[in-house]
Length: 208
Image (cartoon, rainbow, N blue to C red; front, side):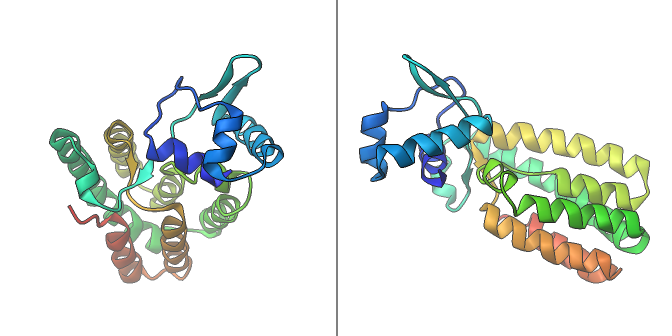
């Protein structure tokens, strides 16, 4: 299943694009056709693919590549847009996480822990493997207890989503993201504001 998602991401397939025929796809991925059909079934249930009988398999939700090498971004305007979006997010997320570490109550921490547990379990782990996930940061925003910062955070997330989806990338792999989220969660739960800030700086850092 992950191989199909990786293929969609590497080819930058858009919503509505058609995958190769089943026989050809099985050969490309070096899997049996039965294994391929099962993967297609799951990805269809996750609303990533749409299998139209007699017509083929189509992409519903594009899969975004982790940005591991700046040279793969061929459009300088898109790269600048992505950089501006991460800078705007960083300016807000760092203060939000500082306040969250100071103000988070048991309900906030339980919500963050529940989200994290869900994000590393199926089906969400596969659903978000090649997509950015901002729900964790939104929960941190709620824990900051500052509605004005939350409003700014929402705008920054909207800008970020537009920029990075247009660019066709996510800042890092889902595995890296999950490790960073776990560390930030621990800092908030222990009410260590200084550590939470340093970890969010690392999370927001992209080498452009």
